[in-house]
Amino acid sequence: MPVLWLCLDGIGHPEDAPADSCWDQDLPVLRSLIDAGQKVDARLGVEGLPQSGTGQTSIVTGINAAKHMGRHYGPVPGPTIKPLIRDHSTPVLLTRAGGTLKLLNFYPPTYAPPGGKHGAIVQSVLDAGEILNPEGFPSIRPSLGMHYQAPYEPYLPLNEIRAWGRAAARAAREVDLVMLDLWFSDFIGHAQDAVAARNYLIHLNAFLEGAVEHEVRIFMTSDHGNMEDTNIKTHTFARVPFVSAGFEASEVRDIAEAGAEIKKLLGLASSEG
Image (cartoon, rainbow, N blue to C red):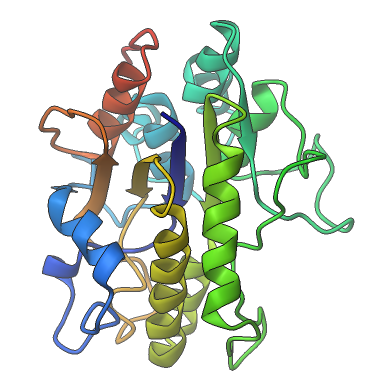
């Protein structure tokens, strides 16, 4: 069955969100997946606010990158943890085992070249030998049909976002794993825009409505909290969702264990660190 992995960025679990947050609205498909999944720790046993560099590295490798580094670090992985991605990430191990994957993010021509600084999700895909904007596959904007500039209003109707979800699910039939790096939620969280936060989850729900029209298994992970609480500008200590719909996942405690569990569920070798 096709596998779609949505790498959320900066979205804490609804149970750890304040009253009247972006989660407090009708999101039938998204909430059904979140509520059936797990609530996992993003602090990783390390002092300080969780950050994307170590958080996403922990997710894609199954190794506690914050403990490996001795602190939370971000937004992108540095030289201390980049080798973890190169040697132990799910995309790298998948391609080493003869599997195939695609990252469906749209990247404009002005995006940093392959040798530049990338988030851990993108870095893992590049380390696996994949390219950005793969020809013949859907090209999906991480803003999910919302403007990148304030006031971050939607510019596409929800039926088109549902069509993106259907296209992603169809693309997943062609390879062993399809990934999306949905970083825009962290951007909205830092902007403290409560209206944009609610709209983003509405668009994410529409994307999933389209995806589940097809037979597809879904992973959803998040590296740390942020957008669930627009009262503050920083990341949060909230637990984060771990969804493994269509898989029989074991209970996990934190985002590193969630990453290790994804490897196991995909039949890849485990890594210790």
